[in-house]
Length: 245
Image 1: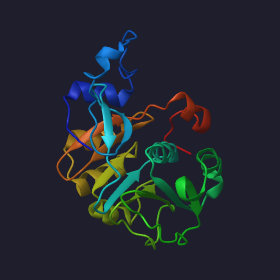
Image 2 (image 1 turned 90 degrees about the vertical axis):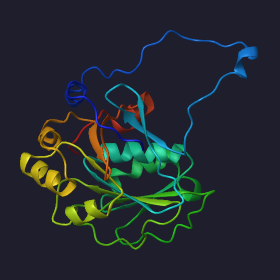
Image 3 (image 1 turned 180 degrees about the horizontal axis):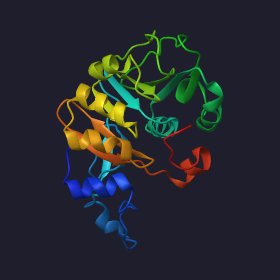
Image 4 (image 1 turned 45 degrees about the horizontal axis):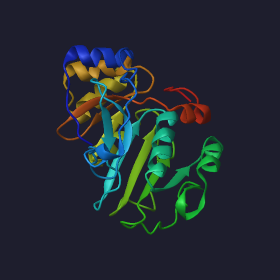
């Protein structure tokens, strides 16, 4: 995921949720003769997690030949949108959760088995057998203090840990992660997150004001505000963006 910081005015528009309705273009059509000249900006296998402050797609590459750990301090809605989109890229999604009822409808919609999404009790995720031809995303929705997982990140197997709020184990998980996403949190949580992640003061102070569906994604070197916009199908299944569940 290419992460860049943006001008304050753009970040402010994004935090308040304005100016991000997406591009508006006239319909285009191509003749068969023109198809050979058409090229698309395709990178690695990635999940479009939303749009940045300039309205451009923000892509998270989760299917990697190296272990990849992600921490999301945020809402279930965003994690479930990411799960849907990961499954759409061909990844198998294994969900480790103590609230299976919150995931059951999603699993039914995607389909279970080795080519879809599966649910597992906390601590009961079996080996997934991830490979280049069958990448896996493990989503750990295990509450404020998730136990150490039996299935860790590995080549072609990324792990996303969802934390509803900052918890005592969060700093350790954030430091170990390759990518950290933060949604709206309290001012005290924002100050602690800013300290752990080394955020500039303006960005840590922005965290309590983020709109529903907005995430500040951070790596060691880069940061990017992203708004996740649901498709009609996602809205029909999951409802509208929300921080609280």
